[in-house]
Image (cartoon, rainbow, N blue to C red):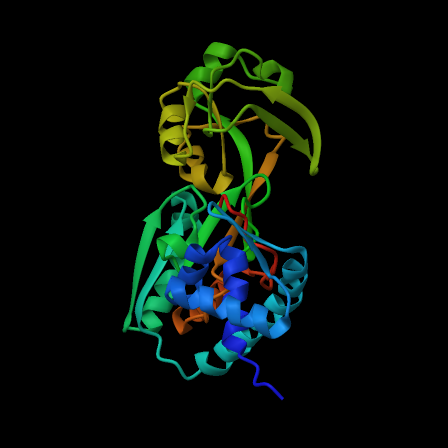
Length: 310
């Protein structure tokens, strides 16, 4: 009976996920020549072609794709079991690299980070502020927080939804005095607006049901909520922000909630992590702390092919 080279099988999975031998070798952390040799050995052992190769590209065959879909979840589960078995005894130290939008970091992440750092003096944390959803493997992040009002751009990483960020509408008293107090969403027609970079319309919800939708052409388009807040305080337009983010300004009378009987569609905040890697103890303790402070649900672990545009 021939010995099964399980490493060849795992390299095969990484080549599928990487869309070729170069990226697949990086994911498997082996030289490209070793990845090519592993796949060739596996093809010889199975007696089938796993990839169609041309001078310009490598494409998994139909039989190769079927094998990948059966095998990849098994390796992911083995990694998870190994990580769980070792994380309890592993020292929580070293550098934890995180990417997060500013609002998520300041409002939802800071408390968990403070508790973890106090409990583990040997741990260091680097937090990069970014709205974009990064490629965790390429950019070397252990965790990335993503805020979106639609779906995740890439479902190849393990993910947890952290929290829903409620949104409502706010304006400065001076702007309301000039424009008049709106009674319905239609009354905002013609008002100057301050929105996200991708805002084309705003939804108006009552009891979670969309009642109206208003097209917007924001005077300021930015994912930076701090900038939108300051512009709203200066009376430059009505803005859509989290009640938690503007509570101080509202409490001081600098902003007024417009159309208080309506909310807007919430933003979904996810935390992503590389499913291919053993989960470091530092990642696990932070996720555990997030669950305690924010009530994070269980991870969703997809095992589909990694999209090439990620």
